[in-house]
Image (cartoon, rainbow, N blue to C red; front, side, top):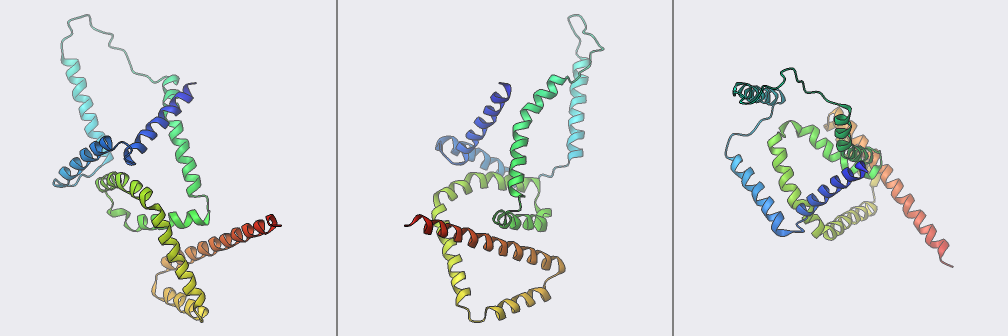
Amino acid sequence: MTDALEQSGWEGLWERIVELVMWKDVAKSALWFGLGSMFFFSCSFSREITFSPISAFCHLGVMILGVAFLKDSVPQSRQPLETGRNFQLTEEDLLRAARAVLPLANSLISTAQVIFSGNPSMTLKVLPVLLFGAKYGSLVTLWRLLATGFFSSFTLPKLYMCYSTQIHRTVENVRDRALEAWKSCPRKKLVAGTAVTMCWNLFSIKTRFMAAFISAVILRYNHQYHKADGGDQEQEMEVKP
């Protein structure tokens, strides 16, 4: 019963976030977007924020020491409490924390399993993002990451939902034109060999390895795509009398 309630709580929180970023309630989304924009724009004029876990831990320790000292220094009008009282975690506290974190952890694990499943389509979608992060990840600070995530969450999902049909149509047209141009090319082997030779001689060993990996993924994706397309055509042929 408790697990169901906690899971419903996480689902309710996720639904409220989706309502905000998809602008289902324009007034509420505009309020949060305006407050966040004011915060990021006002802080952008100051020195960029850097985060250090050690520094944050030390600042938190100083605050706790100050609060404990002030609490101990204030004279107690009533009878003094027991001085030997210690704070201890119990099994119930750990189980309660585990039940709260478990749905989120399972969701992250299932998402990671889908992303790193080895499916060619998913690999082609995730690989450019990972390569970009590996190349320019050192330039991404915590402040830039928060600002980019905030503005992207309030703009990209809504824009994609509104223009998803046009985006898919444009991508399909570009793909069809590229395939037609490649099929109409009379010297495919010569063009492919020249491109591979230039890439092999100009790029580094790491780039060569990544290019070979991407090529293998594309070939497997095309093989699965044509195989699935052929299976669908065979089923249609069998259905027709």
